[in-house]
Image (cartoon, helix red, strand yellow):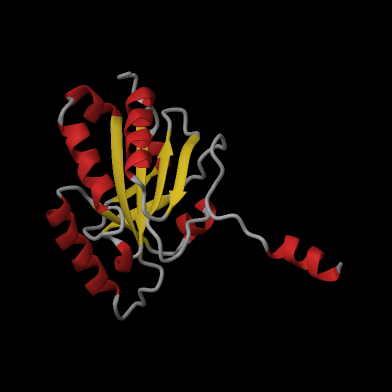
Length: 170
């Protein structure tokens, strides 16, 4: 009986629930650009939140998302993709190197890569550590999708359809 109660208390569901208001966040790029959710109001936001160790886990999703958005100027204008790296383990000694790497990866990915420097975005969104986390937020700031780990082909297609629907293209 005691074990059953303890196991219920210990269960922590990863990821913020769909249908909830997305928590505010402040993220900063390697070149010092600060971005908040408030600044993205009115756009569909796709967050790809990862640690440096798993940035390739959802490469197929990233590639297909780029093709989707580059194929439609209207969809591209209504959607913001945020690549966010968990930088909370950076110390004042290593922060300059981390920032330099964010700038380098921004050029490689052809989009600004932001850092979650204090881990608050990870905590607020209940991101799963050591996995690629995908969050889709609608134009009203409501979470419509959350997944930790590698997306299957079917899940990639579902995400693409959701993004098109939320942006009013379907």
